[in-house]
Image (cartoon, rainbow, N blue to C red; front, side, top):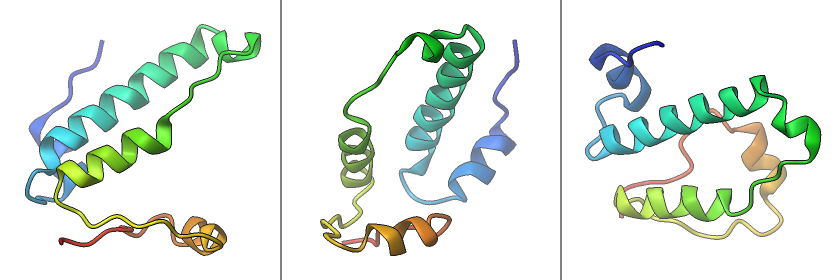
Amino acid sequence: MSRVTEGYLVRHYQGAKGGRDAALLDIAQDHALHLLHEAGLFDHGLVFKGGTALREQAAIQASCETRLLVGQQAAAFTAGALPLCRKA
């Protein structure tokens, strides 16, 4: 079992206001996905729905402006390392 240190959390959310809770959730989801992968459950057709809605809800709770990028998904994926929201 590994522990999530405060330093790891700070690096994950980079000090953004309200980002700590979102970072904890993101890290927990990453660990859960890793465990499911290691257990081989994805090899048997396990599928998750609603991931986009969860990310949008987290962005809204962090007071980020969200908008639909119809036809701009390719550009968004290219710039995936950049934040795709700004404070409203």
